[in-house]
Image (cartoon, rainbow, N blue to C red):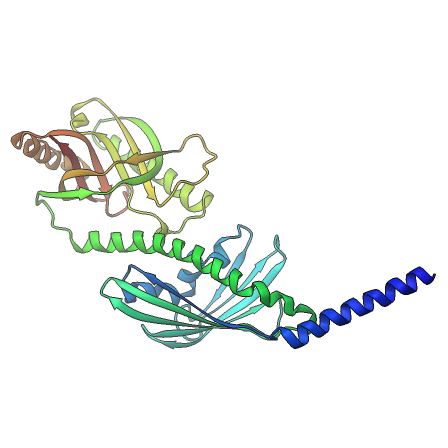
Length: 346
């Protein structure tokens, strides 16, 4: 019995010492600032922060869990925007609000975690560094913690900084695809032959052999595009602004063959685990391309392909595969809007 009394006294003393040290030496809340720069214009960046549907697609706080369920409340964008979330696997829940918005300048978020009545307040400021670069500053004010929980303040800033680092990687990937799409749409000049340098791409898709009879090939492309799109969005959980335009890769002159072999896929920013053996990754290496944008029925693309091949032969260039990038998703019975690229080299 004496042993238990001594143990109890020691525990009381230890808890008292701990509580006293927390009370006198550790702040009840924490304030800190984190700054980052990103190579995208301020209007593109701000739109990813003031729309909570966009925000939750790249912010690591939400993307790091596969079991999190998010409800969005109107207005989805700007001051008054709100969400609630539940993550049963990690036993967490909470609410987040946009309390203030100064367009293209600043936002204030409030985050209530696990029924805590005191929110984490995050003021985010945006500053133009150049036409293509934006500075983002997070000013974070954490809620007051009880004496026994103040030890959490030792790692709060590190945890928040790690989340921002991972989120910035995700944001760059989202904006990279979004800005690329916007630029391509804005720069289209149909039926004009151009020369472009293309960077490397990583594409997830499938290998296909199909009949080249009238309309049969395009129907086959539409069907397989749906398979790939559904797999990427439903099975892999990717959103439309997280990947690029669909690309079909095939031999340049196989439009004359009775059967066509092609690879159809959708560009992703990085390799991820794929459990379905029907899908595989393919890398497109950097190349110089002869390019034509074409709009019309799918069979009509042949004339554009012939123009590219004739140009390559005239310039005494060797050529490889032709890539058909669908600027608008292929839909049966509708015209195509595509970019035809023929890789050329000496």
